[in-house]
Image (cartoon, rainbow, N blue to C red; front, side, top):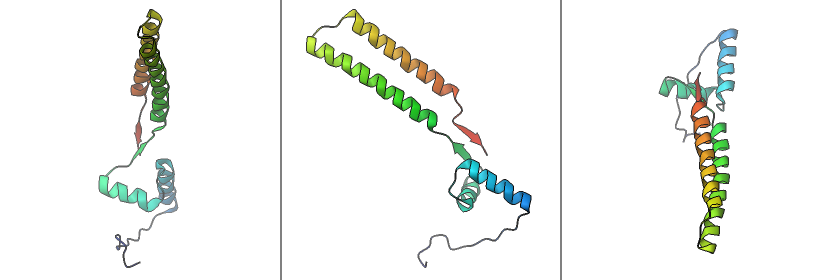
Length: 113
């Protein structure tokens, strides 16, 4: 344990209520443990809980839309012509992109602890 980067230990006494509040904040923040939570708080002065679930959903939907557009491009390259239905389909897919963008921007990405 001589190679530890964090060698300094601090002891802190808390009331039952203070300990419960700290434990709840750590649980809600999804930090690994109290030490991790307190270190972030000391360094940054505030702890943010960033929820990336909406980004995963957004990226998944964008991937599906990209696949659809690639299929249309492949069909155009194979036939060497473009049809109005292809243009309409691309416009429909792009409308989905804009709707996803609007919904993503309307969500709250973090909450202050």
